Amino acid sequence: MNTEVDKLSVMYEGDKNRDAADKIRGFLFQDYVTIMCLLQNQVKCVCSEYLEDVDVFFEDGTFEFIQVKYYPKTPPNMKIISTDLYYQYLRLQMLRSTLKAKPSLYIHRNSNVDKPTLNEMKAYIGLGNALPKSVPYPDAADSADWLKTKVYTTNKKELQKKNLFVEMASEDSLNKFIERFNIVHQQDIDRYKKKLMEALAGAYPNPVKGGDEEHWQLILLGLSISYIQRRYTLVDPVFDQPRVDRKEFDHYMTESVKTKTEQTIVSYLAGVVCEKYGEIINSNDLSDIQTRMLDMICQNTVRWINKIGKTVDGQYRLLNTYSTDDVSKIAGYRGIPVEDRLLYVAECKQGFLVFLEYLWKIMLNICQKKVNNETEISAHLEIFDPLFYIDSSATDYVCLKFPEDQYVSHSVILPRAGGNFKGVKRKIVERMVSVSPKPGKWFFENSKIMRGKNYYNYSTANVNENPTVADLGEDSFYIECMDCIGIDEDEWSTQEDCNSCIFSMKCVKEET
Image 1 (cartoon, rainbow, N blue to C red):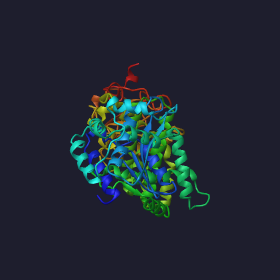
Image 2: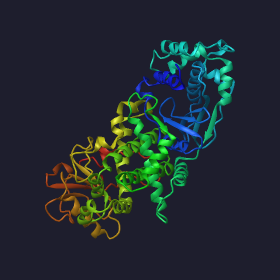
Image 3: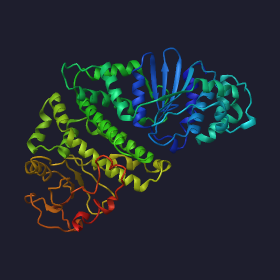
Image 4: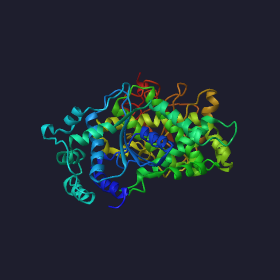
């Protein structure tokens, strides 16, 4: 074991094989912390989801391993957090690491958290009077073998910690750990995001003097988030793979912002996704499990946007879904320069936000019905991914297929018609009647739109029948008004039963 990387690899060997519940990727807040660390002076590289949530390596040999927690209301479990970090610290000491260990907790909650005392740490590791004053460690090579045979034989995190602490924990190492333990209280996710966006704009200023700074900051946020999240798809990575070198990150950001490309458009949309997530979290009284679910939905949405938005055709597919413009304007999108396409995508931001809000709230309702607590998430990972509900074979629009909806095979979330209602509605309808496959249900929110059955083969300005969804034929569709799905402030914590409203045989509003 000649290098510090070899020692870290020994540590990672025990972590990577843990059961699935321990390997669910972290919060978006964690990605923000990762990026902010990359912008610090003297940072050499940062790893996300390697040993801890974020591992930061400094030029002077300092190694900060960070747990990131977002608990606006619920008290964090300091026993688990502290023993997790002590577990990392103790293994570093056993392996004779020359890195200057800095265990840290970055946390947001309404009241501050104190780091544990020696007596509290003694109670946390549960050894009582059996805890020795000090413990001699084998040399690095023997320590590595000992960890493999005594600790890594189980994939249960708590059992790994217990096996290590029983033989290697000591009062001396606990005291040194507490001395180095660092707790950093962070702002709420929306304010922290704004702080991060300002820091990114300071490091990578807009080359266009007098350009739109809001759009520029969203592009930078999306660029950096997309870069960080690439590493989450790695399977059993070695150290070099999850590591983000500060110089490489700087080169990537510097080169990416020089000219506008398809990635610029993708990054703008990804930034909007993150912006909307922060607004929802801050303006709603969500439970911890609701916050966790929405975070996973948001992160998967960023990955989906990176896939669909990387081509002009994918961008067109998005715009044809949520834009309020007519057929000819959207059809001409493919032929305009990338700078103009970016401006057009930005102009359609409100439609994109409405699309996200309804898609996320429907998904959140579905997830809450199937998952009762965080330990059950790993058994249902697919339902937190927008791609699970999207028919990717449809190329004209974002075609949704909700398994819970037993009455239609394809549906679409459309934008609000808003002002100039009749004209905007006509433009949206003109687009939808020519798409393929034709959606059997339109999620079309507007109090002026009559609910019920419509036909694709005549003017859809009128509704002449009011049957159930079960009466639909292939040339007809059903309009859902979305009145039963709350997406306003203070409505996200309310769980709606989609099977009883938007997925039901008949709109409940028609029965009143």
